[in-house]
Image 1 (spheres, one colour):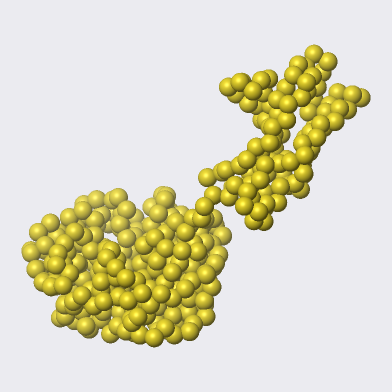
Image 2 (cartoon, helix red, strand yellow):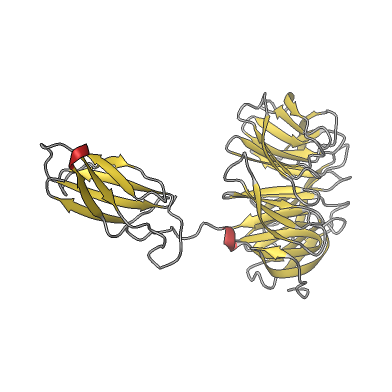
Amino acid sequence: MVLRLVRMLFIMGLVATPLLAQDSLHVRCISQTWAYSAHAVVVRFPYAYLANGSAGLYIYNIADSTLPVSASSFDTPDVAFSLAINGNYAYVADQQSGLRIINVSNPNSPVEVGYCDTPGEAYGVTLSGNYAYVADNYSSLRIINVANPASPVEVGHYTGDGAFRNVAICGDYAYVANGYSGLRILNVSNPASPSQVSLYNTSDYAVSVALRDGYAYVADRSDGLLILDVSNPAAPALLGACNTPDDAHDVTLSGDFAYVADYYSGLRIIDISDPAAPTIVGYYDTPSICEDVAVVGGIAYVADYSYFNIYDISYFLPGPPVVPRAPEHLMIRGLPSANQVRLSWLPVSEDTGGVAITVDRYVVWRADSLNDASWDSIGVPVPPDTTVFIETSATDGAGFYRVEAVVD
């Protein structure tokens, strides 16, 4: 949002466990809670749901973020690697035992209602409509109808090279983080017969993918975050990249930022406002192995293997709009020999509260009267320029001018 103030000129004729000290930038630890082997986290406030390895599903009450309280747990048959929540149900990718569906309508007493074994190792799961899409490691993508959670049924699958680690859905397409094969894009408009549309071979090992506005954000292990233009799913193209210190394992999007779980380097926050030039702008070196992150408002919830961590990331929320001071000391000087007048003003360097700011540009407007419904822009000088030259003639009448300081 662009806000500005205007100066007008009228002229005539013109807890958990004890907090561990860690290296950080713009991120503050709120709490660290011991966990068994947290691989993934999903938040449906006031509860956080953890895929907690061989301990299964853990549920925490996070109404007080400084002191998460264990609400309950459900021990799945194997190793819970990932999960998705929809309504009253948690859908857990449970490695050797496939998809487990757990009723969590009472978070204090979860109950399994159904399951669908998969042939491989269930590592990732996402939901779309009546279907659960399970990334089943080397046995492909499995598509399971979960319209009846008590009786899930596999309806289709796609088998290809590489490890199917994670999947995101947008419309008729599934975007698969496919290990050393990169990003695989499938047409799933017919769930019984998914087909490959394209394959983008990333440089390393694609572990996770998130989608927004025609872009795919891929956590590509040692290559960090890759941003691909997938507006044409048949021709994905690399647009930008941001290398992270360790191995990127998950990516979550919120606002203008990507939150990357960077394994031994913890949480990395990347500015993606320009997808062609992503830049790390914040981090927290978590105490264990950072595998997954969920973001809600100004809070990041991190599955950090040995810990379930909660961080204050309010620094990255949109702040109040910047309101520049109005330009002062507007001056007008006639230049008869050039049939011009020069309009100038002092530079603006503070907002209305006296805080130093950088003005992006000034806009100069003209109207024939104060009651004029439309004002014409007659100049857009960029700082440090604070002057415009206005062409005049002997027949010009009175005019009103205004100058705006603009911060984008």
